[in-house]
Length: 187
Image (cartoon, rainbow, N blue to C red; front, side, top):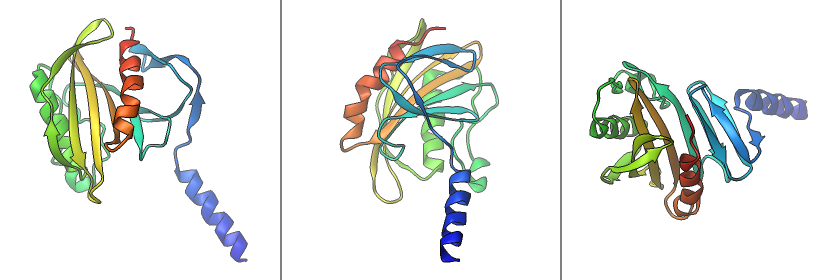
Protein backbone atom coordinates (compact mmCIF):
# COMPACT_ATOMS: atom_id res chain seq x y z
CA UNK A 1 0.00 0.00 0.00
CA UNK A 2 2.84 2.36 0.87
CA UNK A 3 4.42 1.80 -2.58
CA UNK A 4 1.11 2.58 -4.29
CA UNK A 5 0.78 5.87 -2.38
CA UNK A 6 4.35 6.86 -3.27
CA UNK A 7 3.75 6.00 -6.93
CA UNK A 8 0.50 7.98 -6.94
CA UNK A 9 2.28 10.99 -5.41
CA UNK A 10 5.07 10.79 -8.00
CA UNK A 11 2.59 10.58 -10.86
CA UNK A 12 0.56 13.47 -9.49
CA UNK A 13 3.65 15.62 -9.00
CA UNK A 14 5.13 14.91 -12.42
CA UNK A 15 1.80 15.61 -14.06
CA UNK A 16 1.94 19.15 -12.69
CA UNK A 17 5.45 19.87 -13.95
CA UNK A 18 6.25 21.33 -17.34
CA UNK A 19 7.98 18.84 -19.52
CA UNK A 20 11.17 19.81 -21.27
CA UNK A 21 12.07 18.69 -24.73
CA UNK A 22 15.53 18.54 -26.21
CA UNK A 23 15.90 21.24 -28.83
CA UNK A 24 18.61 20.41 -31.36
CA UNK A 25 21.11 22.91 -32.77
CA UNK A 26 19.43 25.21 -35.29
CA UNK A 27 16.71 27.80 -35.71
CA UNK A 28 13.59 28.07 -33.57
CA UNK A 29 10.52 30.23 -34.32
CA UNK A 30 9.24 32.47 -31.54
CA UNK A 31 5.53 33.45 -31.72
CA UNK A 32 5.56 34.11 -35.44
CA UNK A 33 7.70 37.15 -34.59
CA UNK A 34 11.30 36.09 -35.22
CA UNK A 35 13.66 33.14 -35.38
CA UNK A 36 16.55 32.54 -33.02
CA UNK A 37 19.29 29.93 -33.30
CA UNK A 38 20.68 27.70 -30.60
CA UNK A 39 24.35 26.85 -31.03
CA UNK A 40 24.02 23.76 -28.81
CA UNK A 41 21.42 21.14 -28.00
CA UNK A 42 19.36 22.65 -25.17
CA UNK A 43 16.39 21.78 -22.96
CA UNK A 44 13.30 23.80 -23.85
CA UNK A 45 10.03 24.35 -22.00
CA UNK A 46 7.10 26.41 -23.19
CA UNK A 47 4.44 27.95 -21.00
CA UNK A 48 2.05 30.65 -22.12
CA UNK A 49 4.10 33.79 -22.56
CA UNK A 50 7.57 32.28 -22.11
CA UNK A 51 9.90 29.91 -23.91
CA UNK A 52 12.74 28.83 -21.63
CA UNK A 53 16.07 27.24 -22.51
CA UNK A 54 18.45 25.69 -19.99
CA UNK A 55 21.54 23.51 -20.15
CA UNK A 56 22.16 22.94 -16.42
CA UNK A 57 18.69 23.44 -14.94
CA UNK A 58 16.51 26.49 -14.25
CA UNK A 59 17.89 27.00 -10.73
CA UNK A 60 21.40 27.47 -12.14
CA UNK A 61 20.78 29.21 -15.47
CA UNK A 62 17.80 30.04 -17.63
CA UNK A 63 17.37 31.88 -20.93
CA UNK A 64 13.82 33.15 -21.43
CA UNK A 65 12.23 34.45 -24.60
CA UNK A 66 9.21 36.55 -23.70
CA UNK A 67 6.18 36.71 -25.94
CA UNK A 68 6.05 40.27 -27.29
CA UNK A 69 4.44 42.37 -24.56
CA UNK A 70 1.64 44.56 -25.83
CA UNK A 71 0.49 47.94 -24.57
CA UNK A 72 -1.27 47.67 -21.20
CA UNK A 73 0.09 44.20 -20.36
CA UNK A 74 2.32 43.15 -17.47
CA UNK A 75 5.65 41.42 -17.92
CA UNK A 76 5.16 37.65 -17.62
CA UNK A 77 6.58 37.10 -14.14
CA UNK A 78 5.11 34.58 -11.70
CA UNK A 79 3.48 37.14 -9.42
CA UNK A 80 1.51 36.14 -6.35
CA UNK A 81 -2.09 37.32 -6.41
CA UNK A 82 -1.20 40.07 -3.91
CA UNK A 83 1.80 41.33 -5.87
CA UNK A 84 0.15 41.10 -9.28
CA UNK A 85 -2.05 44.09 -8.42
CA UNK A 86 1.11 46.13 -7.82
CA UNK A 87 2.89 44.97 -10.97
CA UNK A 88 3.63 47.74 -13.45
CA UNK A 89 2.30 47.52 -16.99
CA UNK A 90 4.08 48.14 -20.26
CA UNK A 91 2.94 51.18 -22.21
CA UNK A 92 3.84 51.67 -25.84
CA UNK A 93 5.91 54.80 -26.12
CA UNK A 94 7.91 54.04 -22.96
CA UNK A 95 11.53 55.08 -23.03
CA UNK A 96 14.20 52.37 -22.71
CA UNK A 97 14.93 53.58 -19.16
CA UNK A 98 11.25 53.14 -18.25
CA UNK A 99 11.39 49.56 -19.55
CA UNK A 100 14.35 48.87 -17.25
CA UNK A 101 12.36 50.30 -14.34
CA UNK A 102 9.28 48.13 -14.92
CA UNK A 103 11.55 45.08 -15.20
CA UNK A 104 13.36 46.02 -11.96
CA UNK A 105 10.06 46.64 -10.17
CA UNK A 106 8.66 43.31 -11.35
CA UNK A 107 11.76 41.42 -10.14
CA UNK A 108 11.31 43.00 -6.71
CA UNK A 109 7.66 41.91 -6.60
CA UNK A 110 8.60 38.25 -7.09
CA UNK A 111 10.86 38.27 -4.04
CA UNK A 112 14.29 39.26 -5.32
CA UNK A 113 16.19 42.13 -3.77
CA UNK A 114 17.73 44.11 -6.62
CA UNK A 115 21.23 45.23 -5.66
CA UNK A 116 22.52 46.73 -8.92
CA UNK A 117 21.35 47.64 -12.42
CA UNK A 118 23.97 48.52 -15.04
CA UNK A 119 23.48 51.43 -17.44
CA UNK A 120 21.76 50.70 -20.75
CA UNK A 121 23.98 49.87 -23.71
CA UNK A 122 22.81 50.05 -27.32
CA UNK A 123 22.94 46.64 -29.07
CA UNK A 124 21.35 44.97 -32.05
CA UNK A 125 18.25 42.88 -31.50
CA UNK A 126 18.33 41.12 -34.82
CA UNK A 127 18.02 43.83 -37.44
CA UNK A 128 16.44 46.23 -34.93
CA UNK A 129 17.97 48.72 -32.52
CA UNK A 130 17.94 47.26 -29.04
CA UNK A 131 19.31 47.76 -25.54
CA UNK A 132 21.11 45.64 -22.99
CA UNK A 133 21.42 45.88 -19.22
CA UNK A 134 22.54 43.58 -16.42
CA UNK A 135 20.79 43.25 -13.09
CA UNK A 136 22.18 41.82 -9.85
CA UNK A 137 19.75 40.40 -7.30
CA UNK A 138 19.41 38.05 -4.34
CA UNK A 139 16.53 35.75 -3.52
CA UNK A 140 14.96 35.30 -0.07
CA UNK A 141 17.52 32.59 0.76
CA UNK A 142 20.46 34.91 0.01
CA UNK A 143 21.41 33.27 -3.29
CA UNK A 144 22.94 35.82 -5.65
CA UNK A 145 21.82 35.98 -9.28
CA UNK A 146 22.78 38.02 -12.30
CA UNK A 147 20.53 38.69 -15.23
CA UNK A 148 21.29 40.03 -18.66
CA UNK A 149 18.35 41.45 -20.57
CA UNK A 150 18.23 42.51 -24.20
CA UNK A 151 15.14 44.22 -25.56
CA UNK A 152 13.76 46.28 -28.38
CA UNK A 153 10.66 48.40 -28.74
CA UNK A 154 8.91 47.94 -32.08
CA UNK A 155 5.39 48.60 -33.37
CA UNK A 156 4.14 49.37 -29.86
CA UNK A 157 5.44 46.08 -28.44
CA UNK A 158 8.29 45.12 -26.10
CA UNK A 159 10.50 42.24 -27.28
CA UNK A 160 12.61 40.92 -24.40
CA UNK A 161 15.10 38.08 -23.88
CA UNK A 162 16.75 37.41 -20.52
CA UNK A 163 19.50 35.24 -19.11
CA UNK A 164 19.19 34.67 -15.36
CA UNK A 165 21.91 32.64 -13.70
CA UNK A 166 23.59 31.91 -10.41
CA UNK A 167 26.10 34.74 -10.03
CA UNK A 168 28.89 32.59 -8.65
CA UNK A 169 29.69 30.59 -11.77
CA UNK A 170 26.90 30.16 -14.27
CA UNK A 171 26.36 33.76 -15.36
CA UNK A 172 29.87 34.07 -16.83
CA UNK A 173 29.71 30.52 -18.22
CA UNK A 174 26.38 31.05 -20.04
CA UNK A 175 26.76 34.66 -21.23
CA UNK A 176 28.52 33.70 -24.51
CA UNK A 177 25.67 31.31 -25.38
CA UNK A 178 23.10 34.00 -24.60
CA UNK A 179 24.93 36.64 -26.65
CA UNK A 180 25.18 34.18 -29.55
CA UNK A 181 21.43 33.53 -29.44
CA UNK A 182 20.65 37.26 -29.42
CA UNK A 183 23.02 37.84 -32.37
CA UNK A 184 21.20 35.14 -34.36
CA UNK A 185 17.74 36.77 -34.23
CA UNK A 186 16.07 37.31 -37.60
CA UNK A 187 12.76 39.08 -38.05
